[in-house]
Image 1 (cartoon, one colour):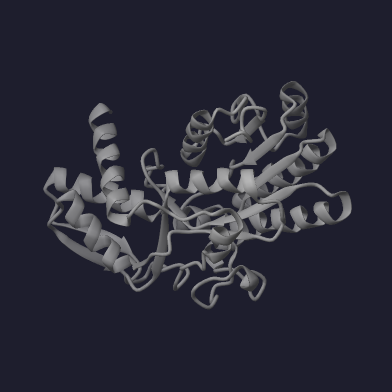
Image 2 (cartoon, one colour; image 1 turned 30 degrees about the vertical axis):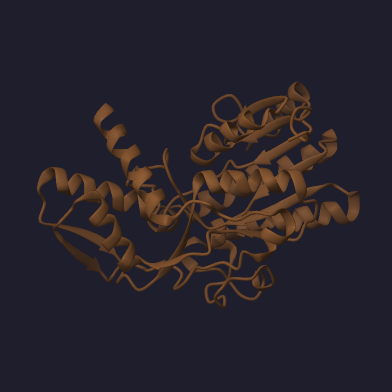
Length: 314
């Protein structure tokens, strides 16, 4: 805990889903100063905004969480936007932080950077052994360039940045907008609304055969801060829960927990996305002692309860 009181921390995307939990965790740890760099006050795609923010705050640590994200549909509709905005939010930021003398950066990548047919469990060594799944490759590759930059800037300049690869996150405060949400919040919303409306069925993309690993958002925040405290290398590190579930079983679990009793209609004309996702999480445990604490069902129950309450409040 002695690491945090003297730190001046910038959290990009600190108003967002993961960012809000990271800020809360920083407050609990007693960080000396916490500054949120987010829209509209700071547009990370504008270098002038980045320079102005760094000059004003003079951070010792920057945690880069800001990203343009979405599910399969959003990625398919906006590949150029997802590539450009994620690249331009990240690459100039790292450069400007190095020039400003920031002592350390924590950079967040994505599991979408892994090749489409990566052997399971995904090991960090397999990251470059193929092209990512096509539906989100532009996003995954834009984020992956931060790993290249992290390693290059450490090699040439001795700049201390670390690169983490989280699996799909979920939890209270997630994005439940059906146009942009990921699979868990999208399913929760569909089930809750269908139950409330007395609908006989809901439609789900794909055939249910794909598998995913999910990480509860507070566990992810803990992993990020442990890496900030203890990890000082540019080799990528997976952050996961060590739990894999098929989309078919996920739908069955969410329907049970939300109380929706109607039929599931699978739209097999829609893509499944990557066939399997499950991480080898040994490096995170060995390098900085991270191990996910929240069981999947407990995390889902809390997420559903949060959404039900938010829905009531309008």
